[in-house]
Length: 239
Image (tube, rainbow, N blue to C red; front, top):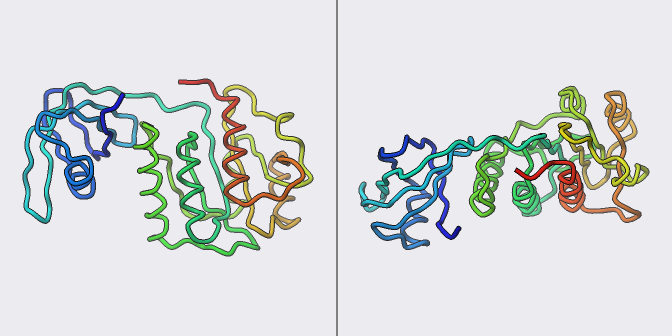
């Protein structure tokens, strides 16, 4: 399907009018060069998808909007089981790479993990940027649900949620021996560059976390996160 995809916060029923504003409208006109009569895809990040036809543009020169007619609309069920990634953020643009790839793979939600050796504690502006990265990755991979970006939490706060837990650890089990059971929700814990402390590993273990390893090499945060997420998806059926 080659129809371009855009984010629309509220998608009305078929036959009604929707409007694209802000960055999405600018991207549609300036980058994608859409013309009247073109058909495009809309998603609201909460499972609603629609095909819409571009009717006309409105607004001002500085704040253009696209007026669309909804042709079809459907609700897509969320992928199950859920995979929650709780990860210490790496420095610089590596965090953007991590969130982009994890969203494409199907991460359900993300928590910036506060660890004793963390070097990045994201501000609210940084969290908003991460949400935008996830949104753009959804458009590229045609995902109906935008992953939830949660506020930073400690290991103790994350592992209390009640799913199966993997904690990345160089002395852990080879990951293909501990794949999650079919239908089982999973939380993946990835530490900072200096690794988890012994106390942090003990906290996770108290809540039933399984130590998992990806071989003999010490991996970057984003490499470990995306690798474990991809392997965890082996236990999730295609939807």
